[in-house]
Image 1 (cartoon, rainbow, N blue to C red):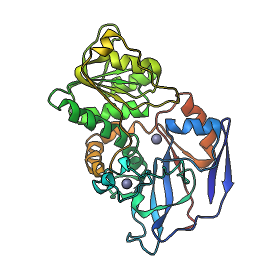
Image 2: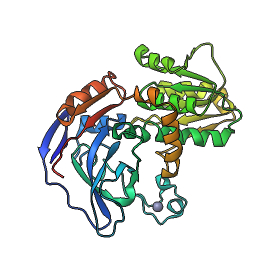
Image 3: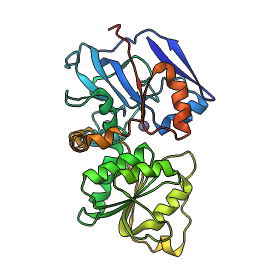
Image 4: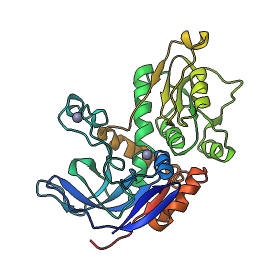
Length: 330
Ligand SMILES: [Zn+2]
Ligand SMILES: [Zn+2]
C-alpha cells in the first residue's frame, strides 16, 4: 500500500509499505478520504517519522478477535488515544482523557496512507445518508468549533449569545460560522485580512466586522492563532461574554495587562476537539445546511498530489482540501 512520508522542508515522498497488522482490539480501515489541516503545516515544514493525517473517513475491512464491529462499516476516525477508564472517559468526555497517550496522525500513523490500524474504540460509525467525503467535515471542521461554541454558550447562557465575531476565515473559522448559523445565532460577524476568505464568510450570511467601529460581542471565536487576532478578540468581547481560543500556533499566548483587560468581566475558553456524544447533533447541523458546508471542500486530490496540495493549502489558496485514497487491494 502507499503512504506519505513527510520529509520536512515541504517535501513528501510516497512510499510503499506493508498493510499494517491489527491487534485483537483494533480494526483495519481502508481509508477513503483524509482532510488537510492547518496543524499538519508544522509536520510539512519539519518532517515526521509518523504518517500524518488526522481528519479521516473510511471503511472497516478487518476486525481484531475482540472487536464486535461489522466488516464494511463506514466510519470516521476519532483521534485521541484515550484510556476508557478515567473519570472523564467514564463520562464520555474522551477528548479530556486524563491518561491520553497521544493522537492518531501524530503518535501513531494517520490517514495519509491507504490502510491504517486503529483501536476499534476510535472509530465512529456513519450511516449511508452522509458521503465519506462529507463525513470528514464532522471532525475538525464541525466537531471542533461545535464543541468550543457549546462550551461558550454554557458559560454565558444561550439566551444572550446573539452577536458573535469569528476571527480568521479558514476551515476552522468558516466551520464555526456555519455551526453558529445552524444554531440560530442572529448576528454573525467575520474578520479576515484576506478578502477572498472573508468573502466566503459573507456569502454564508456573516457581516464584515468593522475593527474601528464594532464593539461588544457576546462571543468571539478566535480561529487564526495569530497574536494580533488574539488581541482583537480580547478587545471585541463584551463583559459577560466569552472568547473561544481555537486557533493555534507555536508562539506563547501573551496577554498584556491593561485597564481594559483587567476590568473586563468575561470568560476565556480553550477547547480541544470534541466528545463523540456530540456527533449526532453535528450530523443534524450538517444535514440542515449541506450545501454551504460542502462548499468548504475546496478540492479533492490523490495521494500523489499531496505535496502540491499542502503548498497550495499553506499559501491559503484552499479551504478544506481532501485526499482521496483509492487502493482496492482489500
Ligand atoms: Zn485538524
Ligand atoms: Zn481516560
